[in-house]
Amino acid sequence: MRRTLAPVAIGAFAAVGLLASSPTFGRSGRSEPREVAYVTNFGGDTVSVLDVSDRKVIGQIKTGKQPHGVAFSPDGKIVAVSNEGDSTLLSVVNAANMTVERTLSVARSPNQLSFSKNGTLLFIPSNAEHVLEVVSTRDWTIQKRIPVGRNPHVVLVSPDGSSFYVTSEGENKIVVIDGATLTPRAEIPTFGWPRIPTITKDGKTIFLTIRWLNGLIKIDTEKLKAVDWIELPRSSRFAVDGAASHGVTLAPDERSLYLTSQLADNVSVIDPATKEIRSGIAVGSNPNWVEFSADGKLGVVSNTGSNTASVVDTSPAKSLAFSRLARVRSG
Image (tube, rainbow, N blue to C red; front, side):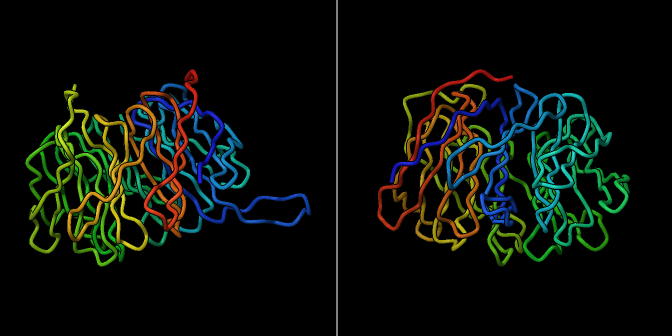
């Protein structure tokens, strides 16, 4: 099935957050659930809201300068957006009305953020100040600043909330934070500039993209080390500025890994057990981030090179549909 989606402006480092069952009001006037994706427009200072099922842009939220990361609270009521260009955090308290209701000053160059499992804390890596800020969502005050090495980029909370992992780009490592004490307890060397991690439901394995590698590495979180890697086929294009693979996510059933290639402008579907590359899905230029719905049937890929978003339909058939969108201006 070929999906279409209205054009949406996307800038560099465009993150995608996918929210299931966001309430909205249909023609009947009753509250009806729908699945929406929030895509940060780094070059346009906005977040685009996409109705994934209908493939339509249903809103544009004006944020701060250069929005980078986006995260949903566990109850789906709050959308947090980090604005790298002016060091502010904007939170949409009610995701249904798509309105910025609070702006919070945080450390410089906030990157990809995440909520705690119970939603009471928000973790924000500061790429410029080399700390992880911990914000209470009860009163929106900064509770703690945790040193995590140079240039932290992404924070990933473990499925049980007992640990969270912070990628330190400047020191080629992942810092493991204890979820109870909020203190660093270990480090995992990544042998390269760590980019985007995804984790299995049992919390034992992280798949991580690293700069220059057109593929990913596999990390054992109990052994605290890389134990394997998966490499995509060699491309005729050179990884300028280290742009090779970036976004990666596990399907909800954990039978497939979806890995973007900025060299091939596609998303590879990989068997995480056998490392077999089952298929490739052509998307837009420079695919940056990929997220899937809770049931794994639909996904959204942000394409920063073509300022577009692609919808991926993961039907039972081997061929997976996509839509390439027309180029539009950011801002």
